[in-house]
Amino acid sequence: MARALFIIDVQNDFTEGGALGVTGGEAVAAGITRLLAEHGDDYAHVFASRDWHDAEGGNDGHFATGEPDYETNWPVHCVAGSEGAEYHHALDTTRVDTHILKGQGAHGYSIFEGVTPEGQHLTDALTEAGITDVDIVGLATDYCVRISALDAIEHGQHVRILTALVAPVDAAAGDAALAEIAHAGGILTPA
Image (cartoon, rainbow, N blue to C red; front, side, top):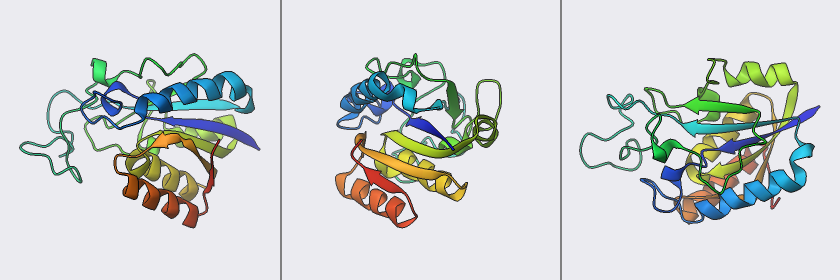
């Protein structure tokens, strides 16, 4: 049994001041940095995902062509190579073993929809590393964290959400997402 950490989308566009900024995003970034400094050796592997949307086109309808509905389409965000797509400065990525890029020409909510810069799928990377257990942190609880956690459970991982190190777009939706993850078999723990 080996445990991994999934850091989900701690990017400038998802933190305060970004195109889709989440209140508490910067605190989550700093908290994950502390976690890695104090407990990084607890993880056999650290994966970090980033939305990495194409600059051209609508990314399969992910970018709104008019007013976004904030359910199925969104303002332009996390365009590959842009400042908004970069990790937040409070997140120290030196302990990240594998970077996962997702949403290239698509919606890309789940870390499982992404690939490494070399094109390897996450499921293959997990198998290679012998990962059976995953802790999940990042942004946003009610979107990419939720879907990544449910996908991890579906792929047979034992999942823990470190609830002090996630932040939602909407508090009520974030609480509902955590309840859904727990109902599916995930464990909720402060840290």
